[in-house]
Image 1 (tube, rainbow, N blue to C red):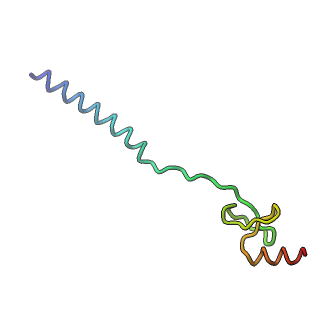
Image 2 (image 1 turned 90 degrees about the vertical axis):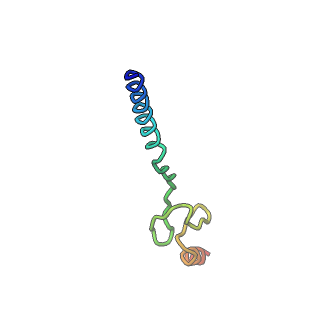
Length: 74
């Protein structure tokens, strides 16, 4: 009977260690996807491409800079 309890506790210990190791890896937050950075054609600051206003292969940080650059080139 003593051997049975010993092996049962050993199996539970191994299960607990393996379960803890895999759950720690799954609990890690996913890495954010990196986004390309572009430069504003008016003020030269960098911003994520998703936040930029694009026009003819040029990017702008706000509508005001877009308007000023487009009106200046017309």
